[in-house]
Length: 415
Image 1 (cartoon, rainbow, N blue to C red):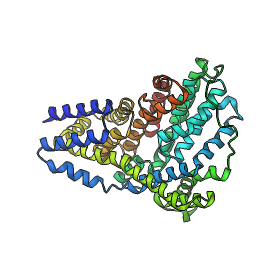
Image 2: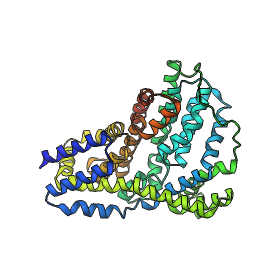
Image 3: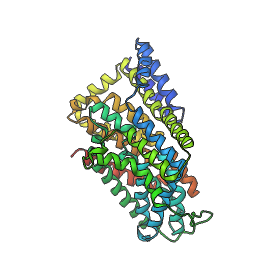
Image 4: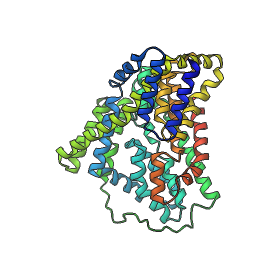
């Protein structure tokens, strides 16, 4: 039974690496293992349970808000506003773009969406300043994990639900590690740019930024309104703002509708379209991961894995960070591996001398950084396309920075 289960899991990983539809692969593998394990209904029960996931409100409302920002053009005002500031400090362009992209991804939690929106502005700016196209793309890609500080990122409420705490408590726990990893990654990438002389001297061809774009400062602030509300409320600075993620996203959307004088009907349509996309893409992965974990439980794989870690506690910290990191790298998405790990192993974190927040945050950060380094991630392909280079060129430059970022981030989480 154990050997058969391992074969199915390995086959699942191979199919994921080959870019087969992740939800289909995870669900089919999970149900197959449940059938072999003699509990065929367990997989279907896990599917039904996942449909009522506690992350629905935060994930769907955040994606709805992100599409509302795209519809109103407020995300474009934010990015162009950041771009104009960066142009005033030329020597800080590369780290500035990394931090700028990170800030955009905090407000709009979609790596691919951020890569497309921020890359269209920041990459031409860097190339126009003489930065090598591949380095320009790598700088934008390096900043596409700011979503870890957004309460709407599905992993944050997922870990919060397991730990029995508020989603802002999860962010409060891992934000130092996240920012430390960002600083290390930015410094390392900038050092690589200077060492290989890719920070200046290159001539841009065929890419021009929208120089005559007039930034409306009020419009540019709209994407960060929900984040500000949630932070002020959760820290107690403004007790009136103590509320859930969905409520903050609705307030931000309504305020944006008023400020931009957008047709409410069209904006509502865009918001709910984003909610539906989130359920299909994000909650769908969570549901599929739950079915897959149910299958592994049916065949005794989880029990065996936990027993192996209990007998060898030294490997727990490696498994929690390096495992999701590698899977994020080879599959281009840290979601499937991270959700599966957090659902299967993280609830038992205390058995290994770690808190649920520690293990959950380690798995999330590891998977996110692995995806940020991956040459086949959607965001990597997007920035490479904008810069006109091969996606592997981005990974070659982001490889060392992301590995260093992971080491430092994990060290901070274990303090």
